[in-house]
Image (cartoon, rainbow, N blue to C red; front, side, top):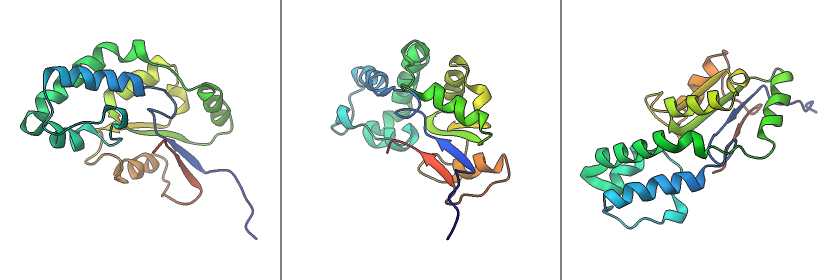
Length: 167
């Protein structure tokens, strides 16, 4: 029988896992829709969890780049003030950090915004790597950012590496 041990590394998603930002993301999306009417009906209560570069072209068609600019202008202006940690997240990260378990973030939030939020929360010391949308050739759900994160410490994906996400 195999001995059960803890994970060799943990990769966290960001939004909806370590921070609660669904309401903020909806507000940014609504601000975008106010400027650009989408080509397809959008269920604002069930927004996709993949990156904007994947779903904005489906929703906004040839105006996707304009919509992305509007969305990120809103996000960059308001994201730090709206940032709310998930209850217990700080304590969990501190505990895992002391246990020497390598921690990473892989998110579909734009990389530079993600790293600003990690810095703002004073969580930088907890993570070996923080990768967001645009940091790799592909975004989640591709495994490319996971492979890049784990590669920072010479690890390969395996059953004893956990990915903690909300979808």
